[in-house]
Image (cartoon, one colour):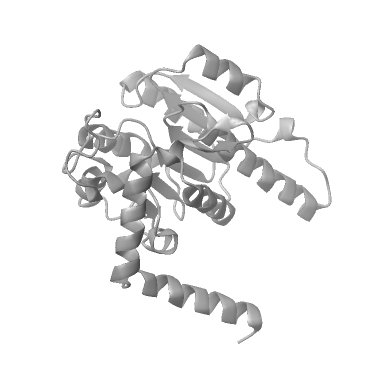
Amino acid sequence: MNPIEQFESERAERIVSLADDAVFVTLSRDWLQASMQRKYVYNFEWMGRPIIQYPQDMVAMQELVWQVRPDLIIETGIAHGGSLVLSASLLAMLDMCDGIEAGATLDPRQSSRKVIGIDIDIRAHNRAAIESHPMASRIQMVQGSSVAPDTIAAVHAAAAGYQRVLVLLDSMHTHDHVLAELQAYAPLVTPGSYCVVFDTFVEDMPPGFFDDRPWDVGNNPKTALRQWLQTHPDFEVDASWPNKLMVTVAPEGFLRRKG
């Protein structure tokens, strides 16, 4: 075994072992709860736009995009646009690397890789900031409920022709809404790619933790994806992602399409 294979083997073994480390699992969950109480997740930006994500999950997105190499990323939930900018910048990175490998520099305006963001309310100041961002040429925004038939139809039409599609669900976190989003957008995920369902951690928090939100224990993204998976055997939970992250808003939320 060469040194690179040795390193990767040791890392894989360590990641598997973390899931069985009850003390570390508890510490990680306790820290997540304490940090959520303090709104720690609101502290960060990506390329100048606020991004309501944990640094661990941002790193996971980089790894996932590099692994899947999508030409389309679909996101529900826009907020300030930081996640859209993150996804767009990762697609730009892929184009840059493809250009280097091909011995040519790709004009980013010629790239077909893009991000589609969906939100029921894209506030004017956020829209203006996203549209004026250097990554704007890669971003298409759709305003409307992510589970409304006309919105779903528009996104499916815009997704036609793309070869590798990654889906990120991060809007309303109630069971029924996430279930409807899975039914609407998971079919667009291409084999070998992922549908990442964010905020599944709600199921692991104390009841009433989000006292100003409609989601709670028993009514959240994790309960929705568990129900949805019962009738969609072509998807599976990839536990390696939350096991390696430990602190993540998406435990059980990395759904890989088989094939």
